[in-house]
Image 1 (cartoon, helix red, strand yellow):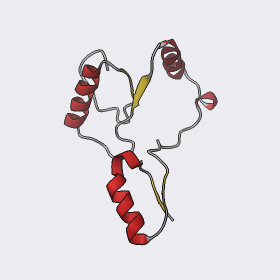
Image 2 (cartoon, helix red, strand yellow):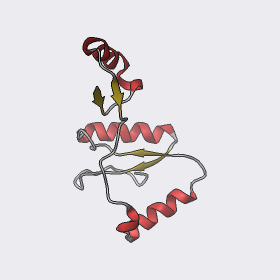
Image 3 (cartoon, helix red, strand yellow):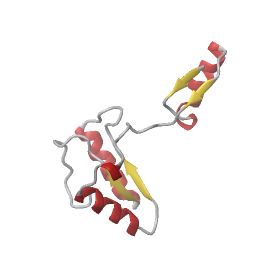
Image 4 (tube, helix red, strand yellow):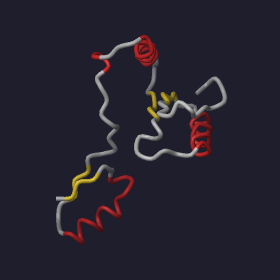
Length: 107
């Protein structure tokens, strides 16, 4: 059995090839975020503010956490931020590196 942290929508040709070459089932566990402590065990004002904001939204919110697996460059993060802003979607952006700043009050 081959297990990958991926999804068929992103890597279907590659995963099907592996299945054929190795003659073993391919199991996909999805793109999982790193394990974090449950908020209920470690509450603070910031977490409460985030949960309150999420609860007030009348439509879906897209969670973006660049750097969970690979750390994108400052330029790549700025491009992503710009495209997300143009999408008109509600975005919850989680930055892992305190040194990365994005201009504008919408991010």
